[in-house]
Length: 508
Image (cartoon, rainbow, N blue to C red; front, side):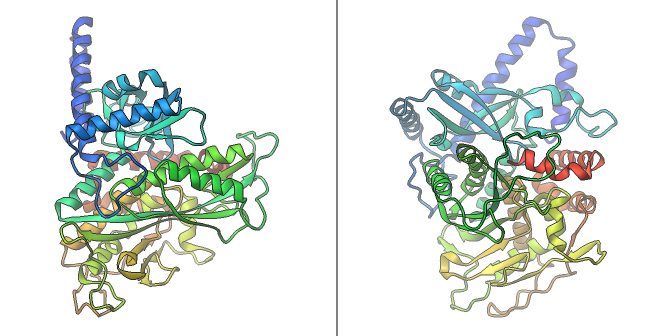
């Protein structure tokens, strides 16, 4: 099936003729279907549950039945050892913010089988359509439930929450289909496409966030300025507890440092293959809020100047069979290989549409023009070697360290969408011949059919996304239509004076 709307219309027509008994029977059948689909997706996507990770391979291997049994046994041991009382079933909403339901630990095994139900609106965050805002999907879908099915490999005890664990979930409709607007589902689908082509992605996110002192009273409706930022360097006990906690949840931090502004921090994750890099970024977005509260701080991905902090995706393409970095030039010359140039050409070609997903709000896009006062509608998409001012910066730090930094993203962007869109654009570059002239490997030439531009206005970026056939196909028509409708709704209902407060409230 290609469109959830069609499915929901069919279900609605059927429900009108069903008796109560037949409705219950149908519900039981759909629960069984969800369970079967989840077992398959879990088998495909899981990795070892231990904290020690093998970064030399992708995590899309299919585990055997004994391996699955061993994971569940390990989870039960962890729950007993840590005297766990609650488990959070977490999923990402469209903005990359964690939405969860907590269950008592004694019901965990039952919920692994049957899933946890959650109102769909928690994840999609758009009001009921009234004036044909999203007329391609019936209003009933916004009032329906979705099912959270846990990926057992992500089960971790939370160091900063008392007797609580969490597990990242994939989302399904009650009829057993993957939720087509699910960012994690979209990212996993693109990684699968990449693996089918014989490649895997080694990637890591680099995030900036700000630390603020908490005032005595916070009124989210009237607060107009963030609390005073911490001066000079970061608070060591806070940041050390955060980094240690992230390690115990499976998210390995490679480095952390204070950044350019007072109270601003930068965290770099260790590169990993597959979906793990986005899972790590998703975990940070939740962890930094909870640990900060323990120290009477607020942390935000939105800074006091009205800009969003940066969220960089550093990545390289690896050959699955030969286990080598496809960006690294074997001759030792610090230039991208031909596959690397093609991948970069794909990113440049789709940069306008990519920017819509990576800077998905008005304030996020201010960073593209920086302090420029010129009245422009777009800016050129820049790239360069070891140049941190470029949108796409190619770095050479040895074989494993040869990578492209996608710097289009803001820290408020959904990491799963950033990962998915980057893979889709890069793959298109690999398959296409019109984006780059593949000259000698040691040549710096990279010629595009036409120069790429980044729109400064969100409405123009939305148009670019709608017109980008490659990304429409890769991310799915349902998601694109829904995402664009949501953003247009936000633009129409935006209150400029309150925008900073909205971000500070939502992304803390």
